[in-house]
Image: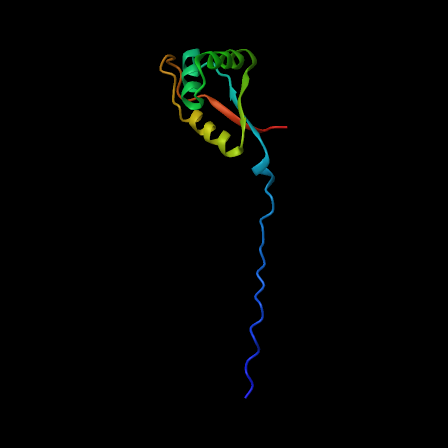
Amino acid sequence: MTSPPPPSPSVREVVRPAQDADLDSLYHLVLLDDDDHSYPYVIEMLARVFGYAKEKSYALACIVDSEGRVTLETASHDQVTRHQSQIHSFGADPRIERCHGSMSAIVERAP
């Protein structure tokens, strides 16, 4: 009777996922201007969502008002989309009667 062959060493193949370019990329979160939100609303929203001081929030509100858009942050895709959701769910400006919802923000890939 012959004994079975000795077990061969097991070979484990480790497959690493391809590096996802989006994981390393940075994105801009851009706030868009409209006429349905007041400066106090924008200042309060930026303070709550980002923790920005009143001075910085006011400066960003001035830029979005004069230029039609302002970059609020440059960060990972997860972070900017999380903040975008918070902006979009912030609600209407109670100071302006015609306001029916939140401000709009878009995500753009940083160059």
